[in-house]
Image (cartoon, rainbow, N blue to C red):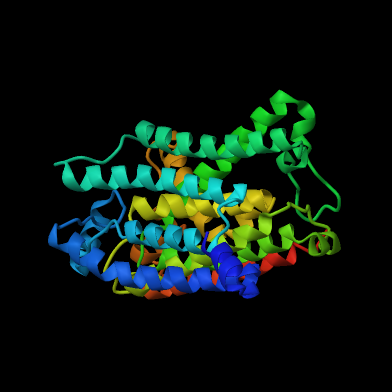
Length: 381
């Protein structure tokens, strides 16, 4: 653990401050992503590791082909995750259970996404992992991390770690641990929905240049603040928040997450030189959910990550509506960013399609507004 080495051997107390290490983690992750990005993109391009934008319509396929994105390499999430984890190892405290389980969760989700990407791009006519196989991979990684967290709560007697805290309501909590073993089971199941749902939401959002990475920077920074505040007993008491000891260390992970996404966005900004792929979007979404879990802000996550969940729900509702209405569509296209891109509207076609950069910029604005609204809830209790 480098901060400890610097502090003990060099006597530099600055490395003991979480705020400093958070900033350094962000800068380090950004630098690593920039350095790793160029050779990785060249390697992927040389081996024709390419894939079109997600979509199942002929119209979207034609738009993808005409934009030249068929030649853009994917699996850029590989160097993004490498930069993220490398920075966390350098600047995070590896004796912190929240950090360790977050790293393991990220690795597990990244491995699932990598196998899915690699199979789609190297096996002829393959669509990657089957939905069931992908869900098994996501579930194993999630249950291991959440189960480990629940065991930590049990072994240390800190049962309040398993409570849920609704926003707005003062002193309100859902004491799942009070239900005994059944409550622990309910906690694991609920957090499975949170982590796997957020992971898939980020995956679905990854469809336009810079869309997922930009929204992830905003949401990640917001949750880093929430983790820091939750881990400070004085601030938590003042704001009426649950205090989670050592949760502040997750702010360092949040800094690394933002920095790595900024480095990736350097190459993914329109016109993108690389796409994220499942190897990046799945672990990023899962790590975002993990930060919310540690900060006890799971119930605020739908607002904080509104863009991600709007994309997820548009795809889910479109599928269900299509099946139950005999082939009718609720949205012009799902996920909704493609409806704006090709139809100019969400529920019905607009006068003209939205330019890709306009969609992404406005999504960032919405993400920022929702982040500010989420931060305001810290005091509204």
